[in-house]
Image 1 (cartoon, rainbow over the protein chains, first blue to last red):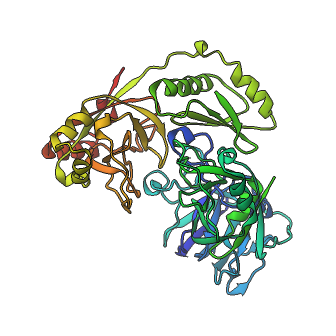
Image 2: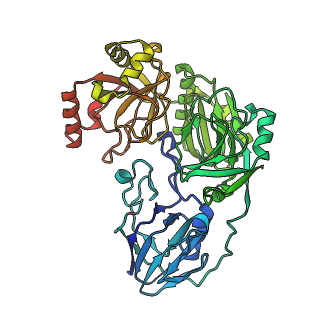
Image 3: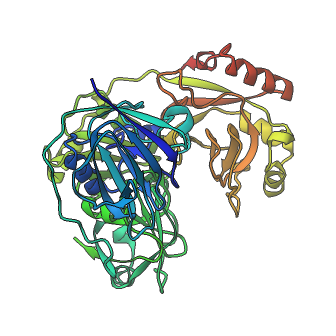
Length: 288
Length: 237
């Protein structure tokens, strides 16, 4: 049985192991977690012949430096982070063959916000409640190894190579990204003026953007509702309106309950687009 | 009971919007009803104070069918679940009670009165949320009512016991926190050895019991050495 070993010479900013997450534990206050950009993660796995839900490395903003030992196939998808193998730039969205060993590096973030690195094979990683994704706040205790540390090693059991696959590289740096939403739980309580404003305005992602979500800035605050709701569920993709009238988008690692009014919820596929947005990126909401 | 779409794969079931035992009973009945059955289309349940969100598989059931399903539920068929009473030792000494003076100022009560009121009744875990293992407990005695901190703390102590509005809770990890801290528990709320991993569940009854600083440190040490397990602090209702 052949093995592949990944050694992290550098960990990167916040490189994590992710799979589809752990659905069905929200009643315990446990967020689903899992791939922030599902489409990119699924593509990465397909490009190396892995099944859906196989662990991948999710790499935001600043990437790791990985020494791979063992022949294998890898693929890089998601944002363009100037990936290179043995100091030669590599293209995303294609199967890449590694013979014996290689050094993977990431450089400047050119587009998007996070890259995905899949390696063909069975990842020998720990799971908790059926998922290898880290649990924010308890990562060390319950999901050790899920947030990659410098010096960490990950072993994979190799599977058979597949014939080269290629996928069209999605465009990630539109001037304004249109985000499809459905009406949220408290949408009907907002005034017509507030709702019209919600869809008219262009929003800019602020300096807080991560796996929990992002805060949006815009010219005009929305006329808010008289109070908060009594804490209720918060599904990933929910757009809340804060007490000062600005939208907050909630993503995979966000708390499972909250008190801000829920004006909308983002279409699942478009949540993937949000996961690729960073400070300064612009969005506009469109009603499904 | 009001049913609303919460996106294309979830339904929000809302009861009277208030934090109230009788309203919460309705949430609990529905929660137990769903948990006691094997339902193919059910993916997740998120119970809260006065609402319940159900995440479903849209390929197996439509929103219209879901509404019919929930409207026709016979709650009399729900099996009574065994209740648990969790005894939580708390040290209310000033070294663990960072916001005690703020609470004294706001409520006009003395520190002893605050401790008496906080420990003087049993609470119910209304829901889990905020961070894993964080149990929203209520309802606090009216006299203890005080608002959240204007500026939340960046990091609270693990085990910090806090109050805000009509609720009380314990921080299971060192997260940011905006509630008023009046004490600390030496028991860990997360335990990798225990199957459940987190101590609290929705529906649990909770009783706070004051301990001295010395007792606090002893209990903390015993828990770390596994001389004390969660079972010690749990009794049946």
